[in-house]
Image (cartoon, helix red, strand yellow):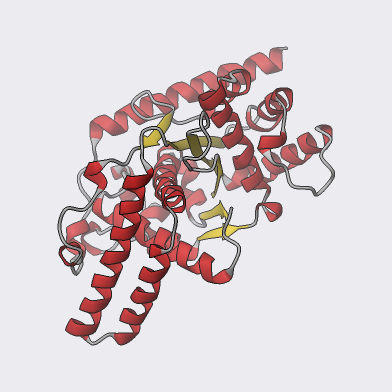
Length: 353
């Protein structure tokens, strides 16, 4: 399976009337990747894009976006979209800046503890370098990262929900996540951004484990074999450290497809451009009847205790898998089944026409 992520919007506060920014995460099964890629390349040629040139969703008109959905998305059942966004009318720059400063303070406190209590000077030096780098990040950068963490986390969960049948099991043998590197231009910056992202993802998935179905354990599912340890402790480090990377969208048509989806969705939420979005809608996985998850940071997001109190050593048993959250799972499953039926009707109607 391949997961591609790209954003639309600048996650900033400087453009009145353009407060909505979002990430689109698309999950594509490997069994359909070649066919979807070929369809994208044919659509790109028919749309007048120079062969081999990068497609940018923000430059495309409404009719071209409509043709993208009809040509690339609708004919293929293994194309699913997850949306995570932020509205800077609701999340202030001041709160986000406080988040940046406090993150830097926690890293510095962790460095001190690693050095004084464990004599690990190498780790302390690495953490202090990270703390200095984080402190220099803008509020806009931090909001981008916080939204990206949620986009990866929710996109991975939705990939699990959408690929739970025995026929889907091989998709989890080699699962790769590609994220547009956006404004990240140097190797040093990419390393820091990747470390910050991966650490946040590992913490979140240990604290609040991803939901899987019991049948996976009974049939020796690849996810269980690769990511669960003794006592059902979830360990996603292989996925997030070895199979997640920032990549250049020029070299990945999957990221370009995510960019087009992000543009379609942002135009709908920000400008009410409806036609492309309504065509794409059956492939958007929702939660609690909401098509997009909106990240909101307020006073409750700000640490009230000292930075030292936020640093603790992890006992893996803290993150043992909780029981399956049946009600939430049933909601998602019924939603995805309804989407599957709707897509079947759309494809049948297209064949009949």
